[in-house]
Length: 184
Image (cartoon, rainbow, N blue to C red; front, side, top):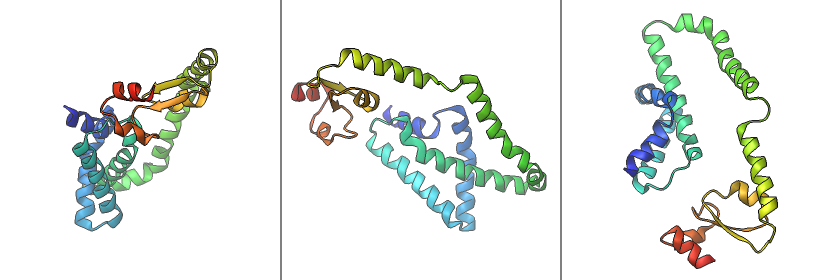
């Protein structure tokens, strides 16, 4: 269902994020119990954000989840820190913190060296730029696109934003087919 899709996109877009949901809930409960104002605000904001999307059930692009992902990571850190204190791991973790802080940096460097300076996105972007240069030569061209970014950047065409992200006129139509018929 659409509700399941919205929840999955925000709370479990990948296994790592899904694994952080339970510690995040714990962190939110600790924030409430200890009256940690910032944690309460983050938790409330994340819940309201997800609830708004769950009610409206619009299409959710992956980057729409960044605010929720951030809230989950912050609250999970708070929850895991509380659990570490409870099972008396805190002294050991505080001694290991400088080494543990290097782990994400080393992983990032390993990924950078593995994929090199040119990522798959850069290669795709170059192919799209070439295609636009070869095929969209008339500035009177109109393109209907669900993700307007790169096409709009590399072409001189008029772009009809089917999702209405930058063109509110899309909301006046019931379907993409109606947009194309009405704007062509």
